Image (cartoon, rainbow, N blue to C red; front, side, top):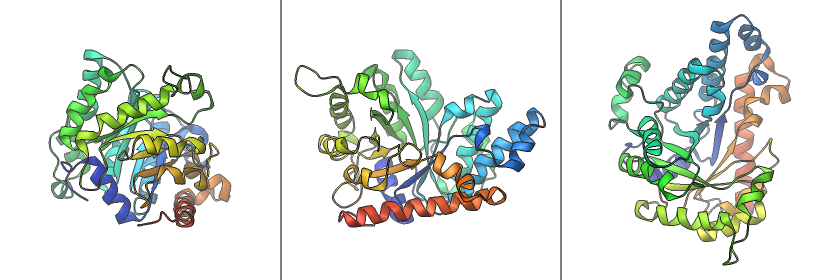
Length: 328
C-alpha cells in the first residue's frame, strides 16, 4: 500500500495493478443474505443480530482481501440496523483498511452549504495516516486514532444533483488528504432516465452535463497515472452510453455498478475502460454476498464469496482481453 497523501487516482491505479483485478466488492448486509448459522444467531436477540451482521461483513472482507483492490460498504444497509449498525460499518471500514484494501464509502451524500461541510467533516476529516504505522496498531488503537469519524475512507460516492456547492466542501477536504470521490453521473437504476436522460437546449442530456462538471472538478487532481481523484459512477446497465461518458471524462476513474445481480455483464463494461485497460473498477454486491446460495454451500459462505470474486475477475479479464484492453 502507498501513503494516504498520494492522490487517490494514483492509489486506485496502483491497487488495481497490484491485485491484477478491476473488481470491487460491495458490502450491503441484509438478513436475507445471512447463511443459516448466522441467520439463526441473528434471531437470538439484538446482541446475536449485531454479532451476526458484523461477522458476515467482516468475513466477506477477509475472504476477498487478496483478490480485489477495493470494497464498497453501503452505509444505508448499516443505518438500517441503527447506531449499532453504524458501529459495524466503521468496523468493516477498519478491517478493510487494515488488510490493505481501498475503502469506497458508498454514502451518496449531496447537500448544500453548512450541511455539506458537516457531512464532509464527519466522513473525511482525518489526521494524516501513515500506513506503516497502522500495521503496528491494534484495531482499538487505530479506532482511537481516527476518533469519531465514520471512516477510514479512501473515497466517497457523492450526489451532485444539487449543484457544485454540494460537492465543493468534500473536494476541499478530501483532495487535500489524498482522498477521492465517485460522483453519480449515470446511475444503474431503470428510472434514472426520468432525470438523467432529459435533453437540454444544447442537445445533450442532464447526465452529460454532469459528466462535464465532473471532468472539470477533477482537472487539478490528475496524478502520475493520468487519472484524477474525482471519479464518476456510470452504470453497467447502460452499455451503449459508457463510451460517450468515457469521451466526456477521459481522465476520470469510473466506478461501474450493475454487474451481476442487476443484469450487467463483463462485455457491457468494456467501454468504461481507457484504451490501456485502466481507469475503471466494476462493483458487484449481491452476486458475491449470496454466492453461497448459488453454490449451495451455506457452511462455506466465505469460500463461496471468494470463488465468486475469482470468477468475476476472470470474467472481466477475458472481456478486456478480447477488446484488446487488458494491460495489467
